[in-house]
Length: 412
Image 1: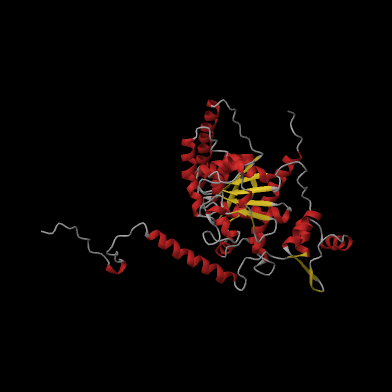
Image 2 (image 1 turned 180 degrees about the vertical axis):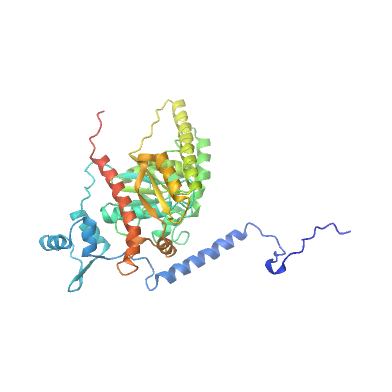
C-alpha cells in the first residue's frame, strides 16, 4: 500500500506547480545578480538622456525664500556685491542659479551663523529599531537641507547594508561601490581613519561614505575581534574613524541599520545628537519603547566593562529628537498614537510632522528626493508640503547645533 501522503483536492486553477527539484540557497546569488541588472537598467531609463543625477536649479524667488529676504533685496545684493554669483539670465525677467551658486548665496546672505572657529562639527545619528519608519529618507533630506538651506558642509555616512542612502547619492552598490570604499577597511584596522572613504556626490556640499551589502560583515567581525582583544573599545570604533573629519565637515549624518547592532551602537555612541523617526502607529511606538531599553542595557554593559578596566564611562547628547513621520491623516490610529508619543517623549518630540506622501514614494522609485525637483518638475503645492516639513526639521536641528557651538565652554 502506498504510504505517501496525498494533497487534498482543491481548486486547481489557484495552485502553481512546485518545481520538481528543491532549491539550493545558492539560487540566492542568481536572484541577486538578476535584481542588480534590473536595477541598473531601471536607473538608466529613468535618468535618460543624462546618465547621472543632476542637481536642480533655483530662481531668485527661491533663493529669497531660503535666506528670508524679498526678491528686490536679493537683486540689490547681487548688484552691489561683485563677489556674489550672478546666475544665468534665461529671460529678461528670470535668473537661475546652480546648486553651488545657491549655496554660496545662502552662506553670504542667509541667517544661519557659521560654525565658530575652533569648534568641531556635529555628528547626528538617524536611527530606529524598526524598518519602514522613513529613517533613510529623513537622513538624506536632512543632509540635503542642511547643505542647501544652511550652507553647511555635510558628510552622509551609510552604515546600512541595504545601501539605500548610497543609492540616493547616485551610487550603485556592487557596481560602483566595493567593500574597500566603505567603513570596513577602517573597522578591520587597515586604515588610521575614515578619510579614505569620503566621496563627493552630485549634490554640492554633500559627501558620502557609501555602503554595500558587505558592510554587514562588520556585525560578525567586531564581536570576533572583541573576543580576541578584551581591551578593544568596540563601541567607539566608528567615532575614532570620524573624529578627524569633524574639522572639515560642519555636520556628519549617519544613516543607521534598522536594527540594534554593533554598527548601530557605534553610531549612537559617536553621535552628538539623535533623530528617531517614528510613525504614529501602535507597533512602531511599541518598537521605539523597546529600542530605548535595549540601548540602556547595552550602555550598561559598556559602563560595567569600563569600570572593570578602571576607566570612567559617560555619554551625553547635545539633543535628542523624536520625529513623528509618515503621518497618514486617514489612519484611525494616528491621533491616538500621536498622543502616546507626545505623552511619552514630551520635550524631545520635534514640533514638525512629516506627512505620508505619494510624491515621496514616487521620487524614491526614481532614486531621488523632493530636493532633487526643479521648479517645473511637479505640482508646486505638493512639493511644498513635503519640502516645508523637511526644511522645518533641518531648521530645528541646525538651530540646536548653533546653540551648542556658541555656548560658553564649561570651566575645567
